[in-house]
Image 1 (cartoon, rainbow, N blue to C red):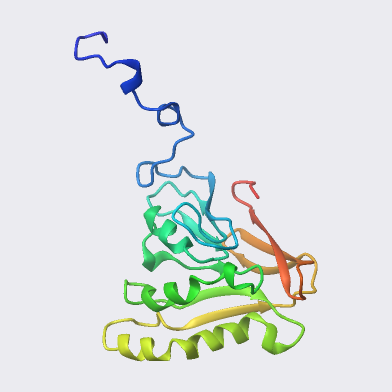
Image 2: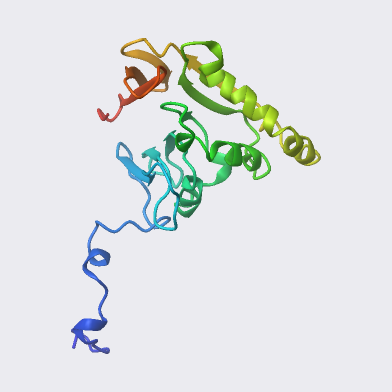
Amino acid sequence: PRPGGGISLPEYFKPWAAIKNRNMYLPGTEVLPKNEMRISFMGSTPFPICQEQSCTCMLVELGNGTGQPRRFFFDMGGGSIRNVIAMQVPMALVNDLFISHLHVDHYADLPLTYAFRAFLGGFTPFRVYGPSGRTPELGTQHMIDSMKEMTRWHRENFNAGPIGDGYEIEVTEFDWTERNGICYDQDGVTVRHWPRSHVKDGASAYRLDWEQAGLS
């Protein structure tokens, strides 16, 4: 019996060990403290998507002591937005997506997110960063332009409601051959990129530096 009375439970009835320590994260129950960084994998498999695993997506959160930390997304593979929603990230605040390369398993949920983000309050432009290719048709900008054309029917249909600038996309396409190039530098956060060897020209690695907290 516990001090002060109350019922006691047999050992087999108690929560498993992970729930009783800080290795268990329950979304919405912990405000990320100032100067603390949280990195969560929304998925990490190429294919197939299943109930237990989604395609690659990393969510980087920079704590500001409020319920809505500053967020950055690295890739947005198929099935990953389901887990972003499960992390209780409001769709209106999904932004600043860095795409490592244009294998579909690294951006398949972008069209779905783009199509419904504006409808759910994301009235500001979607910011996307990604590498160029060997030719313009193989770069991030061309992929985004093609995606906007692909979703034309949806966009025109949803344009009947308030969406603001939510269907605008601000693309930052950088030279994939550049080493230690800077593709993002705002409010003390810098994101750099490097070329990577990955089947075809146009794959990049990223590094995020948060000056205020001294974290990367």
